[in-house]
Length: 243
Image 1 (cartoon, rainbow, N blue to C red):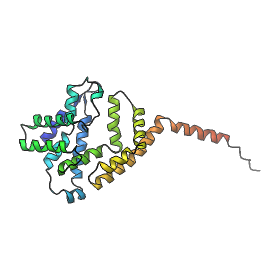
Image 2: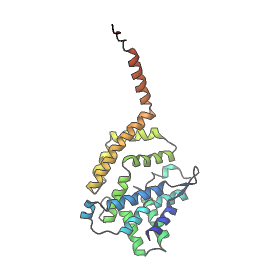
Image 3: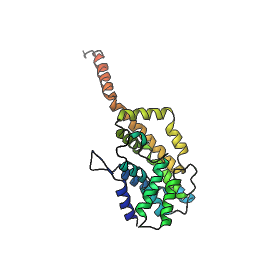
């Protein structure tokens, strides 16, 4: 069953692209979310708190989480970027609704309507602030975790590339988020499980080093440092030869 759902989700999430045969960005993201939800569901903290949840609905919801965005991009491929907030359905009720429509259309001949309703319930409730369903809570943490760390940086870079912007905008955005404590707020408010929050914290720590190195290379700070070291070395007075 899940193999067939995975195949259907892949077809729904693969996008046409002018620069390559097919854009698999959303498909790869869904695979990460599936991996995240399955592993988060296996954490001892989660097992202790959420002993009963529907694995099929949870995994399917992770696969189709961004199906609405894929549907929108396919139908509005020439639309201005202003109507596409990001490569995520977060904060966009229309895209979330489209995801539920894709689930109904694509899975109606494969699984019972009751299961389809459950999958859509998980997707919708995972975006709410007061999730109660265990599947929605797990998917929410899985999606927020994907926004953290180096993977999160590439998620954001995809948005800038789509807008015709590049690395400099990514660096400016990162600096701004650090200045306004954006990441600390995300760590404090976006996770339900302390274990997942700690993993996110470690990913963010690694991302700091990644962005520091990225800025160093973009600004050629390593070359500047080498030149300064070289000048300092040439200015040193010659040592007295041994008598």
